[in-house]
Length: 212
Image (tube, rainbow, N blue to C red; front, side):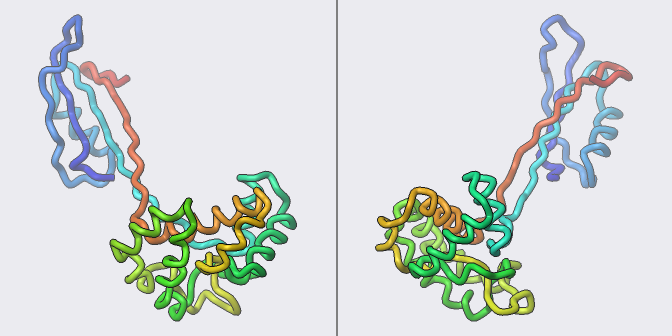
């Protein structure tokens, strides 16, 4: 929550409920509830309390076998066995890494060469603009220092990611297999972007001692 993004609208009780003053609340408080308490003491007549919350959500870690099966079952209504068969097919076509893995992170060695995986996706039309942005901004360069890389969490194989190769085999994929590949590519590229920011607005009207 960002206190500097909390606003207070105050005014007098009038037929049009006209807002006559707008003030930015600047205070080092730790929760919206505390902010509301402070605002209540500062205002007279009636007041609109507009609380704007910003939630920063980091991208989930990369997919492992079970996670990929869960996502594809949710998105495409296919069975876990069918998902595993498709991911195995993508692996055999050199399009993705080994599918039967329990890891959701990359190894340090792979992370240092990850630009090759990214660059290989330039010819994948759905990913082209995102690949270009990641490479131009260089957001992949410090990936080794993030939570997406951890050698200790890897037993035999790292997470499922696109290899950036075998794209000439895409034409021979069934529609569902093409969608599964897209899911893997999107999850992979998302780790090179900043956390998503969600806005949530809350409105509280206070008249004297009553809040609505």
